[in-house]
Amino acid sequence: MLAPLTVRDHVRQSRCTIVTVLQKMRERKTFDTSKLSKEDLRLLESFHNRRRRINSFISKNDLKLTTCPGCGFPTFTEDWFHEICGVCNWQNDGQDDPHADEVWGGPNYKLSLTENRLNICRTLEEKSKALNGVAMQDPNEIMDVLKAHQKRMDSFDDDKMMNALRDDPIWEEWTKARKEVLNDLIKR
Ligand SMILES: [Zn+2]
Image (cartoon, rainbow, N blue to C red; front, side, top):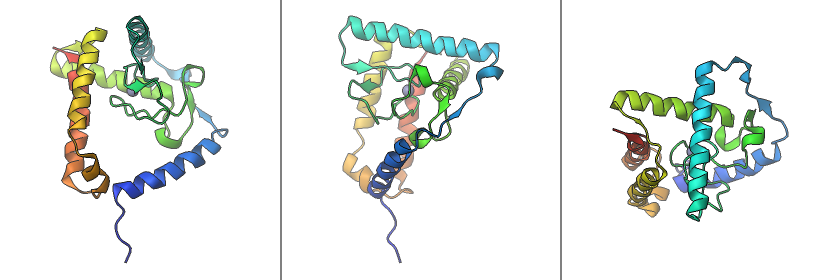
């Protein structure tokens, strides 16, 4: 009988998948933006405004950070290829504004960048309503939230996580902790 796969095995397999997917990137589908509602366009504008504001904060303060093309929050380092965003889960595969409507598959599955942006903006709006607050705007406050979130995620033992099976309770705790940042980004 085969031994169950550890997370380390899954990571090895997904690395091979990423290489295959990058080779197949020419076969791209496109997200149909002709049916976007006024509300969708407003949400996309809020994404672009956030990203612009945070990019300007990063350059003014000479921070070694990059905004995520999927949510506009400063979740990536400068050397960010293949990093996964801690806010929206977008994995950087090099896609950005010029190809935002294309579906590249691979680590971001069937999502175009545009749909990912809409999803995270909708989630933030829903959270704002539920928590009776508003999505945080001030880059300083956003930086503090992301730093605290990084600390929370760093408190998980990497070795333990890498060798834990998929159904180990530590993954449930980790997933829960990972989602907390969405609540923290709502100013009450
Ligand atoms: Zn993101």
